[in-house]
Length: 187
Image (tube, rainbow, N blue to C red):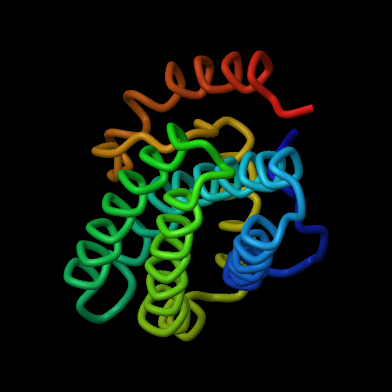
């Protein structure tokens, strides 16, 4: 199952905001799934979207924000630290039975952290990108982000939060992740 494609003509900021909304929705759908099988399927989709989304931000959006916005290094470093913590939590969730109470508790904690992280990105990073970059740049970035997501790892890889680390480890991790997904995809 591919990460859900957001179809619109929006620029990179709108595209990422739409993905943030889908991520929020998937957290709710995962938590509220009526059966373990449906919960596993929703979690699979959530995990995949989170992984490709964060990779694209780390490769494309954050490096541009470092250069283009006020306090770019400080803002991006804080987002990368949040992403690292979320990747660790997501990796841990992968090894827990989706029908266990522990999964429910940890999913709720991850949801809160991810929603908080998304709010920081939206208010501190995306808003400044929208005001500092030309519309044509934002539209071009969307295409690059979409390409990055198509080739990104589909599982969390804690410690791989920089553009350089993603470029180095990403292709191999993506290949392995996609093979694991094909083998372990929920039915």
